[in-house]
Length: 296
Image 1: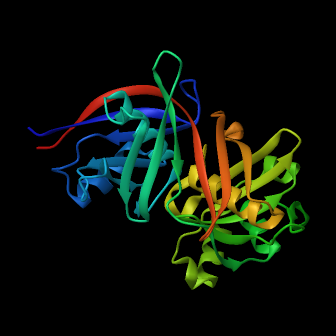
Image 2: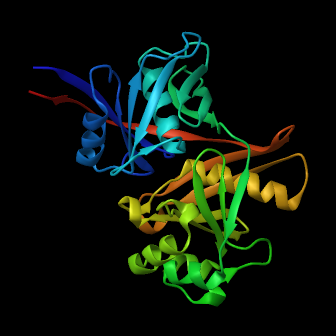
């Protein structure tokens, strides 16, 4: 009977039962696309990754990322967590890993403590910032089930943005952030109104405080009612804020998952590059489980 080993890890936390859980299948060579999608649905995490040999031998792996219902071209916490797992298993000895993904090549710096133990990773998003459609504040407020005046448009309107995978970014008041809850009917209605969303609507709400940035992410159309840590959205937000506020570089500390009881801490480093605004995002990880999937 074929056996497919996997490990699970909590990402963007240094404590078990915090952060965003991830399942990593460390050798997916005999798995079909259908197997991968079914396993991601079975694991029921925000995402599950599948490690394959790279197409280019100068890279370390080809990593495919699936959420409960579809494959993703790129995502933050799956890359951080997969790098952590592979580094703990002996890869990335020089502190670097390169993952091939649908959105492009993801370069990763492995982080270790003074004793040499792997603690986490920092990934570079594969694309520079791109912006798409803007949305009325009232439409976003309806999706988040908050009042329209909870959506702040001083710096920017709610906008679709990407550094490898698209999110709708919206600033809200601290009170709005705390009370937000996804309204499935409003999500479906907004997705129907905008064909350019291609049925994908992931809403990343954030609020700025003296301590940094607090955030929440809702993607009920993809089966994720709320996500405890969203690295790709955080990287996108950092690039967007730098593009608005000016300067050559900026760092941001983003806290997410508090309302879910899974506090997460994400570090974002954004910079102005020749091709636009780029971001890196990183954090710690905590190992959880090891197991095997069996197929007859």
